[in-house]
Image 1 (cartoon, rainbow, N blue to C red):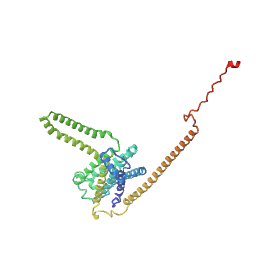
Image 2 (image 1 turned 30 degrees about the vertical axis):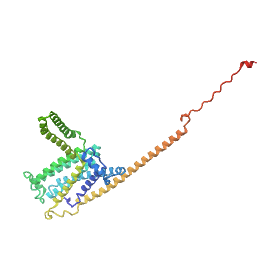
Image 3 (image 1 turned 180 degrees about the horizontal axis):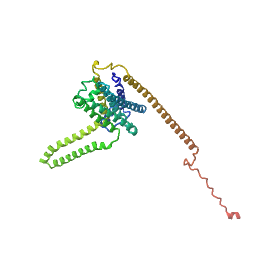
Length: 394
C-alpha cells in the first residue's frame, strides 16, 4: 500500500481542522450563547480587535467558510472510508505495519470529520436529507474502524510488524490480550462515545436534555431546598436541636451544593464547542505522534522505500490543489451574490425615492385652500332699502 509517505496524508486533515477552528474562533458561523463556557470565551474574544469582523465581511466570509468546511469534511469522510475499506480488503497481501498505517490515516480522517461538525451543525440541521446520508457514512466508517481495531488486538501485533497481517488475524483467538488488546478496547470505547455524541448533536434530541440534565439538576436542587428548610426549622427552636442541625445538615447541604455545581459544570464541558475544539486539537496531536511512532521501524524490515513518490503521495497533493480551486470559486460566487444583492437593494431604494417624489409633487398640485384648512370669506349681505310708502304717496 503506497500510503506511508511523510507528511503528505496528514496535511489535508490539518488544513480542514485549521479552517474549522479559525471559523469558530472568529464566531462568524455560530454563536452558542446557551453554554456558559462558550459565552465566556466569546465575550473575551470579542474584546480582541484581531477577532472582530465587520458585518460586511461576515456576510462575505460566512457562506464561504461554511461551504469550504463542508467540502473538506466530506472529503475526509470519504477518504477515511476508502483507506480503511481498502486495508481490510487487502489484508491478505499487506503487512501488519501497512495495516496499522492505514488504520492511523483513516482515524486521522475520521477525527477531522468529527471536529468539522462543530461548524456544520446548523447547516446540516436545516437540511435533514443531507444530514441523514452523512450520518449513514459516519456509521459505516465507525463500523470499519471498530472492526480494524479488534483485528489489531493480537498480543503479538506490535512485535511482528514485518509479518503479513492475515497471519496475526488468523491467530487472534486466544491471543487477544496484552497492550494491543488494551489499546483496542480503548479505541472501541472512544469510537462509541465520539460518534454517539457527534450524531446526537446533529439532531435536536430534547428528551436527552430533559432526562440527563433537567431531571437530575432539579432533583438535587429540591433535596438541597428540603435540607435547608429542615435546618432552618431546627435552628429556630434553639438549644440542642439547633446544634444538631448545624452539625448534621450543614455538611449535607455543602455536599448537595457541590454535586449540583459539579453536574452543571460537567454538562457545560460536554456541551461546549470550545472544549470540543481543544479536545480535537489534542487528539489530532496525539494521532500525529502515533503515526510518527508507527512509522519508526527499521528500513531493513520493509520492502522498498516508503518515501518514494507514487499514487499515495500524488493524490493528496492534487487534493490540496482542489482546496485552493474550491476556495477561489466560492469567493468569486459569494462576491457576485453580494454585488447583485447590493445593486438590487440600491434599485429598490432609488425606486422608492422616485415614487415618494412623484407622490409629493402630485399632492402639491392637488392642494387647495380647503386641504390647507383655510376658510374663504363669505360675501357680505347688503340689507334691503326701506321704502317709505307714505312719502311715496305724497
